[in-house]
Image (cartoon, rainbow, N blue to C red):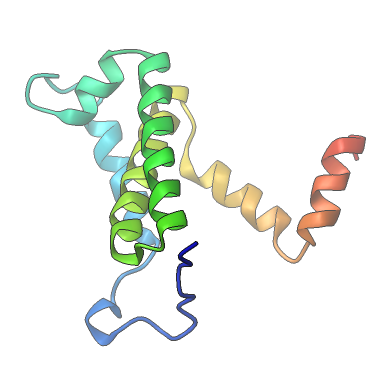
Length: 125
């Protein structure tokens, strides 16, 4: 079974300016497009189709991402990962969530063992 090669090295120089801030900008774009004409905006079209379709599309993209990961196709995994993040943001907009809520949850979990965090969720602690 092919395996994705871990990329522990820093990103190449041509990617040095790339950062997670692009997700906040993308959220702002999707939010603004919510009221756009669905015939000219993909985000507006997705959002106009309702929560079930938004969630279905996210699931489809997540499966495509998984397929590329299992196949070891790193370049395709990058593209599919971008698709997953875009559709996740569309789902957040649909649900009325703001990325800062997710960032705060990640910060809350930071430094906590994944095993301990999952155990705490099971016990309700």
